[in-house]
Amino acid sequence: MSHLIMIKPLTFRPLNLRPLSHSGALRKLVITGVLSATVAMSGCSLLSVYKIDLPQGTPITQTQAQKLKVGMNQNQVLYILGSPAIKDTLKPNRWDYIYDYQAGTEGQRKGIADVKNASQHLIVYFDANGVVTRIEGLESLPAS
Image (cartoon, rainbow, N blue to C red; front, side, top):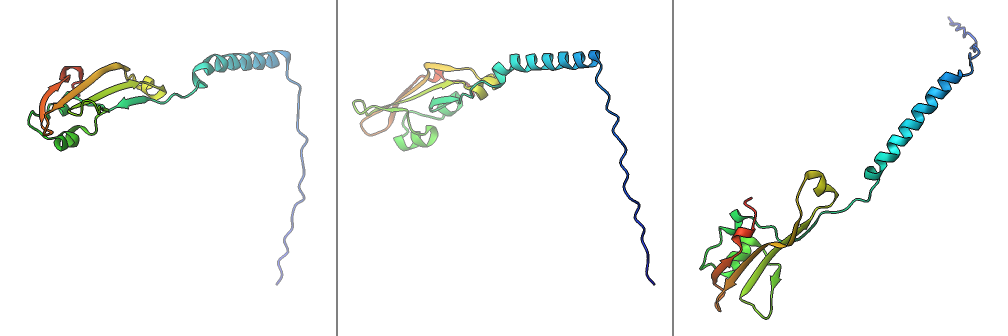
């Protein structure tokens, strides 16, 4: 038993192309022009150079700094705050924690304000044995 399959030949219908009317072509041209102008004007912000956020130093909050107590040793301060931004060899008993921040593209999108001119500056003083004797600058730090 053989089965015979018949295949119908393909037939192509001619495409019905008609020329665009003048008003349709003009409408498309105006829409294209308006979209191009919109993209070009908004392109100043979309195609600008990406700038990175520039944090410098150690960001410290008042909550963190209030954990420091007079009488702690240098290792305890390092554990709580991390390494200081400045350890002056001429004043080895003073550690300065300074923080500056310049918002880049991402920081500006999130509305993060710049921190300039070392306005967040915490100073920890030690005695000759490496024990905290004084802490300055808590008021310059953000609450959280």
